[in-house]
Image (cartoon, rainbow, N blue to C red; front, side, top):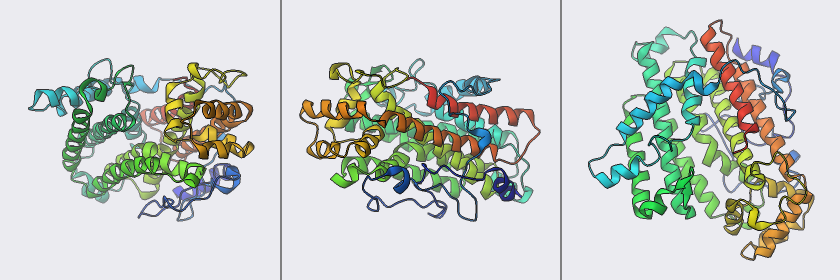
Length: 430
């Protein structure tokens, strides 16, 4: 039994990773945006151990404590991106075709971040294509017939590829809308769409991508998958609204921050991973593990983003590295002035409670930014954020290790690549 194997292999939990998850909604139940605790000792009061319903223990395996040292090396037989390079190339071509529009200006706007050279590394599609192979397991034929229409080979892979396409369209649409809300002028090293073509066209291009994603989603004819990804869009809107409308207590709550981070960053990849499992006709237990991998990978990714906002490409927060506000990442200053407080500052606030008064006062005054950065430099805020990212990366790796055994070499290779991605996420410098 899968659960008994998990219970045997995954005893223990990360005590400092003790915040949300129990299964509800009907699969996942999270904190209400209004149900949070003020920042205290976030290690013990906020982040409750990730426990599943139905008796599944918190994901943790000593076998995959792979990120304890900064120089840890994950066995890397194959580059994760290389394993799916051919499919990623096809996916890029399909995306450019899918966002074609009758109105030239709209077509140009919609394909702005799908053009060759500015499409990014396709991180999310890579995860989903690797997950598709990692879940290539024996399944119940009756379930497969219901979910897959009887075709268990090429049709399944094409449907899972469609999830990767839909996920990327939703992701890019959210970027376009975020750039408008944030008044951003660059994205992926080039001018943001709103900066180049204006806010109105950027919003319409994002809406257009979402509409194309909906059409592609409907073509799958799977109501559970449709419901999952519709929930993702709701989460994106909810997370952005939470960020825009925080109260003073919410702004200083790690629990509230992590809830918002799940909605804005991790929901898309976690629910997309689960959709991959559902399309494959896998069991509820396997679908939960796929979800857990995506959720924890997404949270780790955002936490490292929080660190890099302050440190750039620096390996650590060195003395004096935050003394000159002019050399700080512009995003940090912008976030603080907009009242967006991220994990490093929240952790620093635990060590220096007087920082709370500065946060409450706001950061329109540059002197307050310098004060906050001074406290951050004296605290373990950066280090503790990294440690929390490592814990989530380990939880993601443990989820992959908990999947049913397989002797298939391609399955094993894809699972190793998914674990390798957890290492890449927390050791990246940009």
